[in-house]
Length: 407
Image (cartoon, rainbow, N blue to C red; front, side):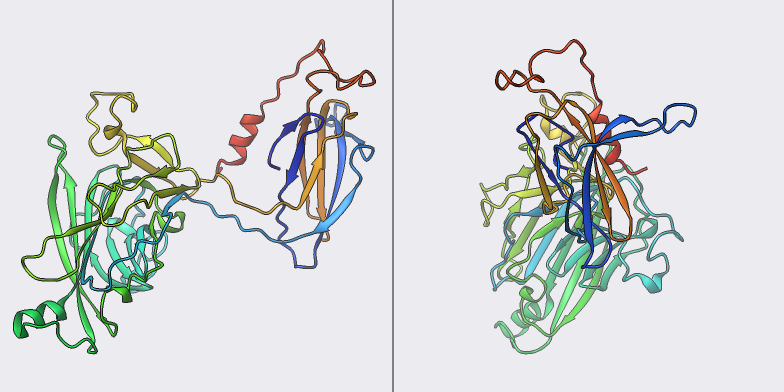
């Protein structure tokens, strides 16, 4: 339901998922709960039919997906000019869970194409945190580079990771021939992954290791990996556990030794802290007005890479609390379609009600509803309005928290 309580005149919407076949039907019936104590020494569970206020009905059953795990996605596509032949994605990351070697997916080097935690993805390109703290870059389903020899990533430590892809053919042809080379030949791409750990005192990144890889691609230009409709995603698929901060993308339109990097787009994750939309930094970037949208309620205002213990209120120094904490079990709103609506009748007595749903396979779900009295009599004939001598406090907020907590 979209709400656990209501008053006469309010509308309650029911969003239902049934895992049976497409021809399944779901029956709905309302009852008033008199006692919910299953203790055999007591009165037991007692319910009273409430069809007077809700006529039993049926509606078609269907499966609606449950997508758990928080992630972020740009509102618009992050496209690059067709002349781009060098691109770099940079991000600060702090993993809170690193899968030990021998556990989870992809523990064998032969199965390294199986991702564990996706840090970010952009088109076919993606950065993954694998077992035992190994970083790997994938193009689609293929691993094209990994850092396996560095000290493994440790939980709860900040790292700055840069992934660079560069068209080697274009650079070589320019150096050797003075032109742009043959556009129809296979392109050889260079891949560089750089990992740096944060210094505890200066907060500056310290170089740990770089590793090079290669990609053979039959398409000329970075568009073969980053199509025009590609969005940048953080914690793609809701699989990452940890904090991410301040992603940015740099490009070069011409690869020579003398062309400076251009800032395509970046985000300051300490901005707009009370919202689920982070505006892009438009001052120096090429692409403007492309906010990063947060999904499934990741936690904001978390201690970031600059936090030094001098300020404990994020409002006073937001740059110290720029970390966004993603979890693979975060849930917020599944976005299910509505299957049924019920307008609470004016003459219904206040109390605890149960909407009981049963499908063709006799799978059953009981949804509690707490009907409050009107704030004031609706007219002279209404007997349920106005003040009452007894007030009951129902902990519906606790119910919501337990319902969204993985146990």
